[in-house]
Length: 491
Ligand SMILES: N[C@@H](CCOP(=O)(O)O)C(=O)O
Image (cartoon, rainbow, N blue to C red; front, side, top):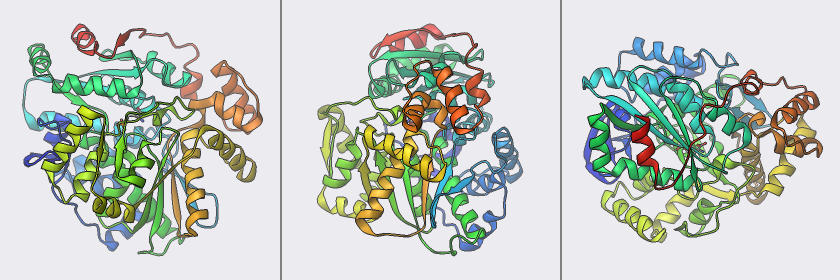
C-alpha cells in the first residue's frame, strides 16, 4: 500500500518508507492511498484469532511484508501484556462495553502501537538500505512519551528524545519518563504546555539546517507521535478486533452497527476508529470526548477551529491539547482529498491560530461524529458513580469518555451497542482517582497508590511500584524554542 501526503496527493511513498519518514517533506501527514475493504468473513475469522494474529492480518492490508515476518513482529509486540487477551472488554450495561487498552508495559493505550512501531521501523531501515540511523523526536502530554521510550529503549540504530510540558503531566507520568533506562533515551521538560512542545518538535522537523546537522552526525529524523502512520495503523486493529470478539461472543449480530466513544486529544485514536469504519467495520457514530480544552467540541459544532483560547490544566492531562494534529487527516477525507485546500487551512492555522470550514463539510462530519466535553467536576463524579454502581475503576480520561457517552444517550436516545475506549490505568492518575473514589487527598503518589489498591482491592501494578526507588536520570528543562540545541547536544 502506498501512502499519500495530505498536502500534496502527488507525493506518495511506500508504507514502510512513510513509517521511517514520520512526516511528509511538504509538512503533510501520510494517509493510505485507498482504504482496503474488510469483508464480513474476514471479521468473523478475526473473531477467532489471538490479538497478535488479528494484528498481523489487519496490518497485512497496509504493509506488504511476508505474513510470517509480520506475525513474528506482532507476537513479540504483544507478548508482555499483563492480560493474555491483550485488549479485554468489560461489560458495564446491557449493551455497553469498555475496551481496555492499558495492559501493556507502560499502562496506556499508546503501548498498542509503540510496542510495534520500533519493529516496523527496523523493517523499514532494512528495506531502505540507507546508512543513517533514526532519531525519534516525540512530544508528549504524558502517555506517548513513556510508551515511546519503552518501545525504543536500546533498539539498535535508533535514539529517542521525548519532550513533555514541565507542569503538564501527572506525577506518575513524569516519574515514568524521568527514570527511563536505556542507552539511547533522552527526556527533557519544556517550559510551556503540550502544544508548545509539539510545535517545537514540528519546527525542528521542518528546519532543513537541523536536518543537515543531524545527518552529519549520522541520523535522520522520525516521529513516535500519531502524526506517524506507523502509530495509526496498529490502532485500527483493536477496533476491528473488539467488534469481531463481540460478534463471536454473541453480544452483537454481524453487520449491526456499534457506536464508539474515544477520549480525544491529538485525534489519533478516534481517527483510527474512523479508518476502521472506512475499511467497512459497521460503526454508526464516532463520539469524540474532550475535557475542558474543548476545541474539538466547538469545531464539530461550528466548523470553526480556534486555538486562540484559554488553555486549562485538567485531571486528564494527556488530553490537554489545543492543536489536534490528526484532524488534518480527517479534513483531507471530508474534503475528498483536496490537498490544496488542506494546505491553505493549515497555513491559516499556523499564521492566525484558527480556520473555518465550509458549512457543507461540517454537515458531512456531523453525520459521522458527535462531539462533547466533560469538565473535571463531572469527570470526578463519573469515576465515583461508576465505581459505586459497578465496582469498576476508571482513569480520568476514560471517565471523560463515559460522561460524554452517557450525555449522548440521554440526548439522542440512541441505544446501539457501544464501545467506550479506556486509555490508561487509573494508577497513572492516582491522587485524583483516589479522591474521586473515597474523598481522600494524599499528595504522595506512592502513598496514594497503596491506598487506592487497598480501597479497591486492585493490585498495585508492578510498573508503578518499581518507580519508587528508581533513580531520576533526566532533569533538563528548556524553553520552547530551545529544542534544537538540546537535540544536537544529546547526539
Ligand atoms: N496524548 C498524547 C499526546 C500526543 O499524542 P500522540 O497520539 O500524537 O502521540 C500523550 O499522551 O502524549
